[in-house]
View 1 (tube, rainbow, N blue to C red):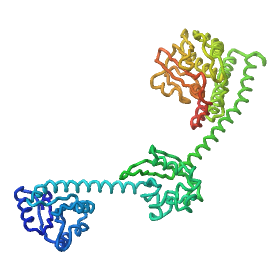
View 2: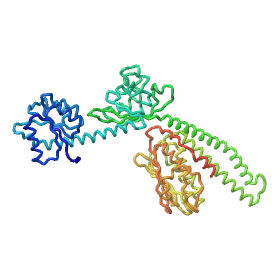
View 3: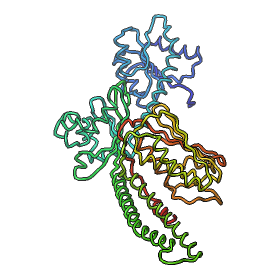
View 4: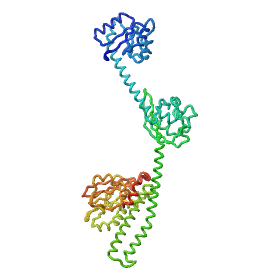
Length: 526
């Protein structure tokens, strides 16, 4: 049969109405395959053996009413017709599943509405089928998700769970559904209380409870937290769960979709990694400290020989001793940088915040670095505006920052170049700029310049260094609540801008510990 033909079951015991209906089909040339029955019992037999797209049924029959066939046609659109005009019957029919209701009139003009009513019924059924399929798809996805999923209503009652939750809490579906969250999940603080989650004193500080409440509350916010649960299934184990709750509205009522993921293995791995990195950090710090003493002895011995205290030396011997001294100094600088960096990473350095005069600090930096600049035939200038306010910072650490920046400028600026240091006050900040007319930094290096151990690749112009200096500078500035920025153009120079708040808003926090995978490599290759 052509799939485009609509299969109609007409349940009607009025022969005139049947004739009028058939006349309508011929007059309107409607593509209906119409079957006519005149009683409820005949309709039942017909529905047992044949499927229809739409049922058009009168209300009252000798052997019953149209409601007697509603249960047999749950998947079929039903249009109820009656001459009674009873509003109560209409409401009852729609509640029972009828998709429309037509009142018969003596002139049978109601039949003119039949085609459009049937068309709407078919569209309505198709839409219902699409929604039903989407609902089944969503339910299948919900059930298949490997992360535990719950649907919780405003009363904190679990309305749906997937299989991952059942396995997680080691309960059957019937032991979870329609229970309050605490009892459903087996919370040890609520399993003896019929009211479940939210009624035990321990619930006041329960992160699981607060996470779900955040999604069900007035603001309906999304919340996520890692917890160590107090659940029956985990009371003998060390376990971590990641819980997140997302607000949803179902049938006009607030619900929360709660995702629960067992992250115990991840937490154990993170803890193991943290312990490993701490051991590595401690090892590198210890080795670095232990290297200082023999390096100091080596440097002192080389200096004694170079100064002739141990006897006269030849020019050739002096040349090799100078090379040895330079490399000892270089290794000592690397060790000092590694130790500084390790302390910053481990949060072992605390700032000594005092009111300081930046003018005095810059003067000290200028005096310290001028001999090195003059040795390279560079002009090092200092520009300071008058009446700068005092600022709260760690004097020694800011001197370290500025000395490092000026020293870098000296290293990367050719002879007869210029280096300038200027400072001014802008919007409650000290803004310090260190500019040079040196080699400049390629664009691809600007985003990495503060990364530890990063050194700009300059073919044929490689300048030795640890690659830690700017990383240390950046961390010190961040600890002050400030920021550092860089602008550069290859062949024209570089400007580093340090912005420090006149008064940090809060006591600076230590910086997070990071991994040290490349420290050994740096020590081995420098």
